[in-house]
Length: 152
Image (tube, helix red, strand yellow):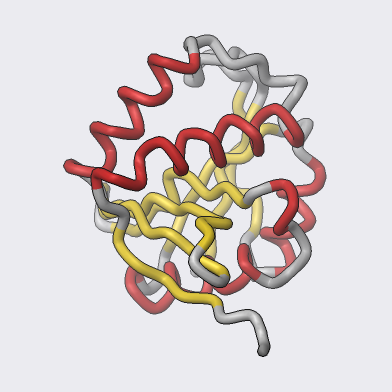
């Protein structure tokens, strides 16, 4: 039986699994950007996002393998968060989530990427995003230089 990838809005019972995915992805791919919050604080933050923001999940065969938070502000769409489970990377899940974001938000869409995150930079370049601003890191909690990217 082929793998089935489904997208749905996150619900309160998903918070633990989303938190685990987020923390695993951060630890696997963003070791240079040390988390400044405890695991419990991250859990509370995600619990709040489920009820206040558009948090979309990607599920493969009933297992949460990706999460994305979308918003609209300053007359444009934003991908606020996009994380894939380390075991599910390079399976088209991230590309499918970005495609969904483009359908829901339309152009332009912006997002932030740490400048050291070359994996994410290559991924978003393949999705048609371009750097529009380099920043020194003072605007993020990790104090890591980042960049604003845009798809238009």
